[in-house]
Amino acid sequence: MLKKKKKTQDASTTHYTTSRSIATFRLLGCSGPASFGEMTDRFQSARKKIYEAHDEDPNKHTTSAGVTVPYETHYAGQMEHYLKLRFPEASELLTLAVCGQHFRRWEVPRDSYPMTKIGYHSWRTALKKRQAKLVGEILEQCGYDEKDTQRCMALIEKEGLRQGEEEVQVLEDVACLVFLDDQFEEFKDKHDDEKIVNILKKTWVKMSEPGQSLALGIPMTDECKALVHRALAS
Image (tube, rainbow, N blue to C red; front, side, top):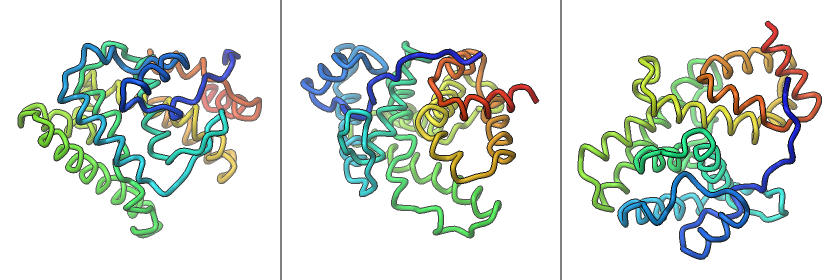
């Protein structure tokens, strides 16, 4: 049964690219994926550059606190929030891959590809490769060697997911959790119940057991919970 709990502060209100914003983020109860004092200078620099790009997103999101932020800034903050919950010992490379999961996605809109199933999958594949390449360039600029850069790029492209690679599965769990917590409510209003139930089934089997456990604790409206129950029951 889905648990009821108070909605947490929107992680996107602070993306902590400075020491002041790190403190604010922790004050709000969203401590981030790791102790930033333990992260290297190159990590701090790469993460800052990623968020500076997110801040250029012309699409806006209004947080639960009434603050308007670029959507990708919001999305990356939510991804990091769930990374902390799912895998608090996350490495620098996994954290940067999570931050850059949708890097500059707004520059390649869905309608730039055919509005078909094949077009959708082609769009998703192209995005993953583009996002990995752009984030990889940032890592190189910040002093990461080729091995680490390639590893981060592979995480963004989710290489090894079918083989059960742990960090890739964590990233997949985090993306699914953000969808359920942050996008599901709006998404369900655009599709009929049968399609939503189908999508929920696919989302559920993508997650590991720890990811599924976290998903059951996400606060939802009664309507959303009913759809989730239908998906799990079938």
